[in-house]
View 1 (cartoon, rainbow, N blue to C red):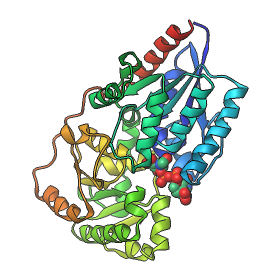
View 2 (cartoon, rainbow, N blue to C red):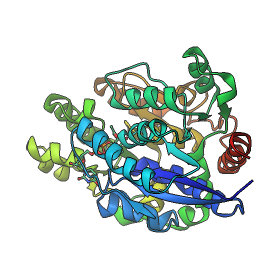
View 3 (cartoon, protein in one colour):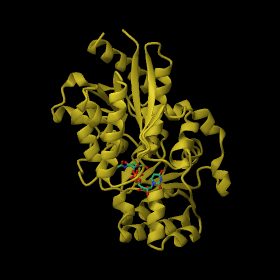
View 4 (tube, helix red, strand yellow):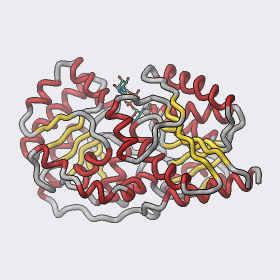
Length: 369
Ligand code: UD1
């Protein structure tokens, strides 16, 4: 097989820990060169650069610098900028990860120019099209040529949508590769001590979904609940830029910052954040990735959403969906309960990137020789 070029599309915070293990695995292969394309959807130091450092990624080889905007603006800008890149130098394979706007945009631009696309974390479905990510997932999976799924539900969803079985390959959960790759550095930190906290006796909170943090009444209810929970168990709350802006806009930032036991901090990079998660007693979140990481680690997780595209985190893991009204009662239940059991789903083993590299090689051998 002739030498191949593989683009890895990175855009927003949850993408970086998904491309990192793939980058490292492909860089070790003699038959290909991985090229990191950063769309610039996330651009703050602590939302992007710090993750590249923690995950030992080089500076992006190509940076599209598209920034923030409405969904159509962001999607359109990535399509236009990435199309130019594709017309200048043609990769043999484009790898997209997750479900952010840039994932879908890069997929559309590449497939329209006849470039093969592989989607890592394919097949996840919340069946809730009010979530922008669900639309991104459905469109990306409809167009991609190779679909790498993390769990059996992913395969089933794709088959039901008419995706041919030969395009689907279950490779496992790529986030776990990053966690295992950096385990010793994560375990070597004591980030929780910075907040005067003790191992196992605090909670970690992250909230950024538009449905939770954009409507003022929802945000207010969340702030009230977190303040009361923090009275029982201290909470560390790295505040996402979207959430911070909304707290400021609605005059709620002071309430968050002054609540006893509630440590509202700026977003943290991967290693200190994962150190907080490794050592906490519970997580309250609306993130996708944290539902998986807590399942893998056996930490109780309360997810403030009506649905999840990651059902194995409930059926096999430690995750529970809840409303803001229910969350305080569930925290009490967890604190008074026997503790969670750790049963990681199949192929969540830290070896997903190796399966991805082998699958990419087979695909390219078959496609062109
Ligand atoms: C995006 C993804 C979401 C993912 C999340 C993780 C989509 C539709 N959403 O949501 O799936 O879970 O990333 O963070 O792709 N901002 C900054 N600095 C930054 C980035 C964003 O200040 O580095 C602010 C901007 O005001 C921006 C807002 O945050 O408008 C939202 O950013 P955006 O990338 O549109 O969506 P997220 O909410 O981060």
